[in-house]
Length: 355
Picture (cartoon, helix red, strand yellow):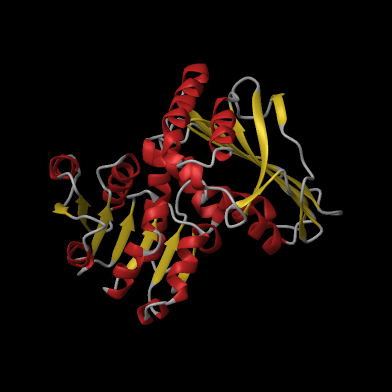
């Protein structure tokens, strides 16, 4: 019997991952968390075999016991800046493959810096969520032929928990990306772009604010695709979150002091438009490639829940033997067209188009 362990299975991302994995019928589910009442409730609501297990990411023994016997361990617990490669290292050493709904290049680097020998035989997939994740994967659907330019717009209005707010406040510096930069002619062009205020964009409600941020993920994508120019924007429905982040980053004090302001800013966005998240990618084909598709759009009412769907899809790909051993991001190892097709039929996706 295949055993799939899901850490954080009672959280917003984890509950959806559990639901989809149960629907895929891939095997027995081992649901882990600190709050046994919540974990047990998830197991009771899950069709098939689902076993609740008490586990704490900061308790090495319990974490090892949880991973033992699993074919794959799916991490939906956070915050990612604390998790890094902790769970991946234990899972791989236990002989399991690994999928992380979050994680980024820092987590991959940490795992590879002193890689367990088992990593040569096991897959460790990070950033199997929405952003990073789909934000670096879905543009590849437009890149079946050479591109002269690729633009990405990702954002909307979503609830932000306190832990997610801390993650957002820590997502700065060259390891994550470069503000106001574009990718031009094989390099990062600093200060090449300015924020777009009060603009209308396909798939977004009303007028929005698009802030240029060339993420490390998007820069790697541009390099791999050999795109002449790439522009990446984070989209906000009001200026509340950018103002809260700017205030926090200008302060030398502890970032935790600014968490309530970021959470409140997200709630203000929800009040303005209702919850939704859009991924919009627009491509300009290279000369002579005019028949290639030029736009991909995907919209969901819940960005966190959709990350759970992505993590479940990544898990099915790993179990199906379609992901090679080693540590890499989901954007670099999943089939973009296949994932888009599966998402298009998921109830958490309210609109999906390629044209």
